[in-house]
Length: 220
Image 1 (cartoon, one colour):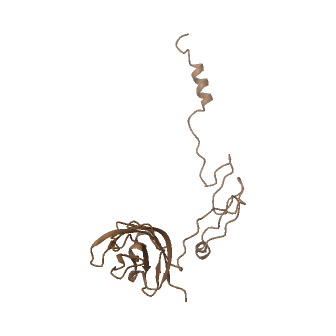
Image 2 (cartoon, rainbow, N blue to C red; image 1 turned 90 degrees about the horizontal axis):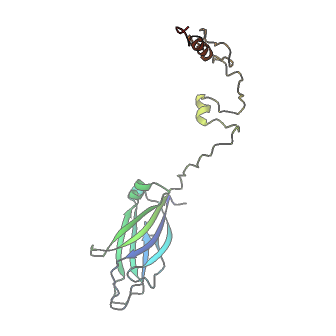
């Protein structure tokens, strides 16, 4: 049975780590990542990063618990510990509800999580990119309008509620519009049952003629 959700975690890097291996040399850190403790994943070991390791590694983690009850856990661990070395460097956690509330499903969330020592004391940070996927959720495809004049299929809402049919590209300029709408050809009489509006202002040519004929009135 497929998992209900899928989590993509890219553990980018960490900094200011506590060197739990100080008696024997530099750190050889790696990250352990999980949501369900029965299904843990690990990054590679950074052999040279010491207290500022870089992994930049993506891990995919399926899980089934509801988002509200799910938490991402990250442990930074020293590899190849000696008998007198406790390998755990620090731990961090992130509630997946906060991720979904902030960016939603299928969107990238970036954070720098504080690491805590087993005693609870803050020590260092780990940088992560997190993306929560819900297979049941699919983002809508972007809408690209059809080429001009290509018929468009009516939407389900139009079919259900009797909305107006889509433009089909067959209407020609000057053609008779759908019945029920008054129509007058260009220059023809209006069809609303009312006389057309006639301006009482003289035309521009008549106004010029009148002005010209009366230019010298009173000077003859």
